[in-house]
Image (cartoon, rainbow, N blue to C red; front, side, top):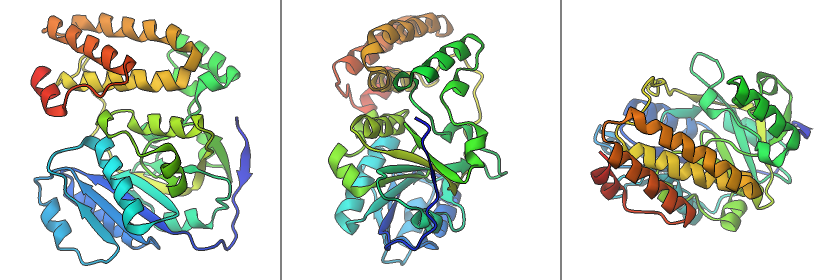
Length: 331
């Protein structure tokens, strides 16, 4: 579970690395991210612009770099859909060894991608960077983790932690791993500074675009591990995530309501993969939480219908209705 490996500071064969960036209406962040990536030894950069209206598309059209490919879907595909088409385009256009993906408000620290290439990557299918806020503190939303259902000791620790409101500490990497000089095997990570071999993508498939937003990265990296892949945390590869716009909300309900659908449905998809045979025990606990949350909503009937739709679509492995229809039903 916690197998560690020293960094292989050797002169490896050249790594063909392509970056995939999904963007939506954050032009200033996007400029910094693309500038940072193009200053590194990447063979290609695929940018998926999800219908930006802030001048991003116009700025991207003005760039002159043979390594850059810009995709402009006719509709917003969400983060998951963006990474799906971005991964596919990267494989077709550049035939890389590795992909690295992140959102438009993230960027590699100077030298991060060069450091990645200097690691001993043999036997590794995926890798997660150490992600920090611009002020240098660890970015909590991008902290990699182990799946407690696959590790008995972690499961016990997580259960006891839940009793004291500290369940995250049971399965997320502690700060000491960020200071380590060794990599460590993990089970899941976010799509900010996530590296995947092209061979792995071809073997396990593209990210699931129908998930749209929320949990698609955890689902993908858990699937990588479930299918026998090896995923590691590389603390010497640093990314910066300027996600200050995602300040924590104190609201007890989702607004707009459609966001609850993606959170609930995708959460069940994730727990089904993570918990395996334990899923019949996990499901009632999650459903109870949904039902108890109804008290926070004015439109209780509409909210409960959303819960039913999320449960139905998760269990039958169906993508459900289109995003536009979902927004119409649950504004």
